[in-house]
Length: 215
Image (cartoon, rainbow, N blue to C red; front, top):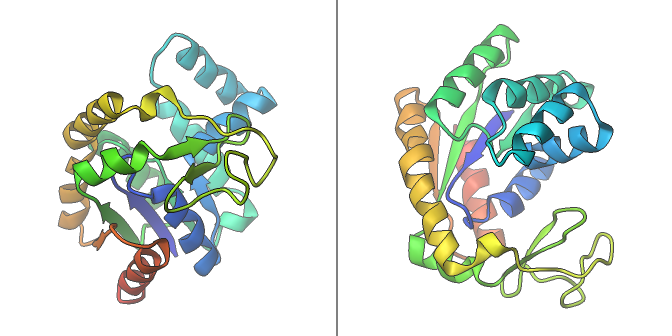
């Protein structure tokens, strides 16, 4: 199964992506992880991505697509995948569709996770992340086993500056302006499945799985 998960920042996409990918036995491919892997390995695309980020710019679409194409060519992604964090714009969706079509691997579904803005602002205020591995926790809904410490590597968790309420509202505006048009884009192509993202993690996961099972 080939799936994209979309939704506003703080909607719980990362948590749900991992659970849904495991449920359907496909790799969870997050663009943030691809950036870190390629930058750490000092690949050509990693150097180009880092140069853009060091200048405070977005990583160019062609660089992201090159990273993604290489990842999708790996054996574990041949039977399917779950994309998290890409595409973010209609232009990126068009480029991705062309790449997948050329590789004879069209999408099966796009799941949009809906959460009201005010719920997101409140939720993100409780978010903490690992500065080393990037794992995300929430003090209420998805806490670390030991408060303030990453389960994976024992590093002290931090609150990112972009998780502050005023910054979150700005990020939500960017999402509504730039990424929300993807909802209409994928609805027109009969790929969209919309899921209520408010509630316990297990309930949201069950809603997503049900939508995918009925595709």
